[in-house]
Length: 397
Image 1: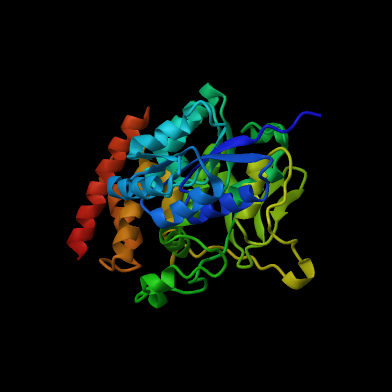
Image 2: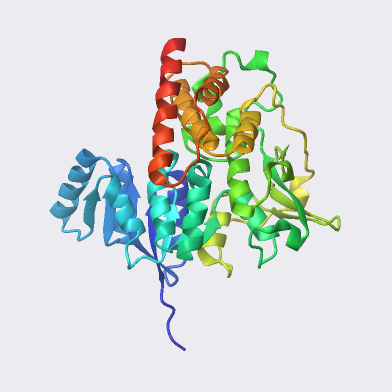
């Protein structure tokens, strides 16, 4: 019996929470996976530790000064890993001919070009960067179809839907009897609050997610329910369902990760403890299964499951995302850009929590809808929306 040839993997966003969880799963299966390259923005202390453990051939550090510091450190210790720098290095690694699998885990619009490069190169793409589809859904999915790339979702909700759909599902719900998909939301740290209770929310309160350990940007998105809105748009492109066939319910236990409803009345769901290593392990090994390091779900300990409708009056970002999806074209990209600017301003204490949806709404109203045809057109709209949102932030200061 021949030895297994390990998958050669690039982890884009290696020092973030998804990147670290990915490396945790990989480390449990050294016979199956080889870390070929790692990439990060500038967090070189953690990156250097990861280099020592996984000995990749390459690392990419976007920040040039951080890259030079890391290069000097590695040379002084005789470490052979080659250090690349700049945003273009991410694309180089994503398309490298020796790479089989790309974990696309860079947060926000910054992760789009490298994720798209991996799709264009026909790689096995583990997509944790939902903004790639929110910003450039038609462009991205066209690249997947043309190249024959394998696109596997990492978001716990989309991975749950993927697991609950037929194995031969190809984005044609009616042929498989699918009527709706249901995305579950934890409700974030302010579940049950009304608008008056959100007036004085601080960044520290907003990033204190009750269930998931995530970075500050996605934690704020969870607090505003924008994260769920972005997931609605992502689900549309991944699974080929219109907005009226995508539902959101608040499920504070975060145990049922999402559901698929069928025409015969069946509802299939994926359950598990809230740990991102489960969807990561599923996507790494698909169509097989491997141990992730996550314990087995104890249904008795869970006790009960609660569900409720999201409050779009207190959390209007979810409604704004549905509106952007209905408008189509460039509107989702504008939504994403405005949200990134507004969240950054909130984290810097330049605007209030309740100002986040106001900035997004005004930006959506100001930027006319256009058709997106390629990465250049996507980035142009993104830049236009960011400029608009930044001026609105400045005006509100």
